[in-house]
Length: 407
Image (cartoon, helix red, strand yellow):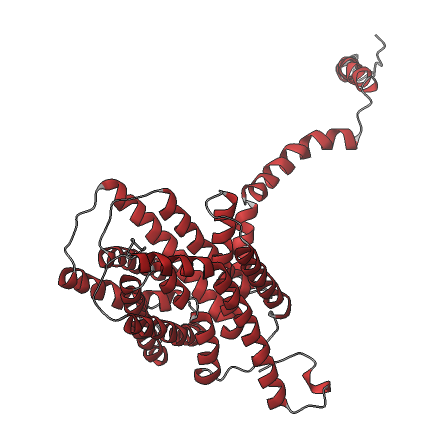
């Protein structure tokens, strides 16, 4: 080991040189294996950063994959896009179809009709109350909307009572057929009550008066509704003729309760149910747009319908305590009815009544397709023609319907 001596009064100072040599050797010994290890894998900045970022990317992407396609579709449908109004009404009709399927598959003991209505309206009232509380919305809406909400509740319950009377006094298929006139009545009522005007984006380029164009478009939409209704007539034609023959021979028909009233009164009550239901749609649209919250219209209906149905249950029928199975099925149907009513109100809020009303005929179309698919219904010519008319009419409404309002 070399050293450098410096004389200062006969003393040698080599401490600093010795320490420096030892340190240099130690550092050299520590650096040498690092360099030899680094030459073998040839690690660079890209190879080092890649395995570290990969777990982070996986952690960040996991929450995105947790949102299912169904949830994204529901959020997009509710958001108010171009097709949201039509899609909300289509989902509402689909939920009603699912309720029909569940009622057909899971048969329950006979429950009084008013008791079923009371249970369903109570569930709708409770769920709408929880929805409004969770979102921080006022239960009774703004002051200027309360008259609309009261009118909506009254018209909705009158329509419900009339429909109940018609299905108790008429064969079920006839009562349902009369109920399918509600979209037509709603379109006419929207023209009168809400003064709805159907417009085309490039209407100013046509050398025709605006009133004539509006009337023409109104007739076109009525033609679409009429096409769907004729499809329903084709579907129920064989049932109506069969029921007429069964009644003439004295055999049993599908009535809930046989009453001694004249059939013409039951038919008038069925038509009255359609008219009041159509007017109720107009108040739903007006109330939902004015309050910017469609659930308020559902809550107002449940607030009136639930106690009124309870009174009718104890006044006109004997209360029957359901078993657990019947209660669970009725509760599930009540929850589905709540979501169907909310989607219906949202669809009326986003789109004009005369446009979305035609989408309700999807329920009849899906019901027939379900029956034919399970071989419960024979695919007769009349049924196929009826399904085709409904499908064409609904597709035309979906293609020409979603237009932005020019206000």
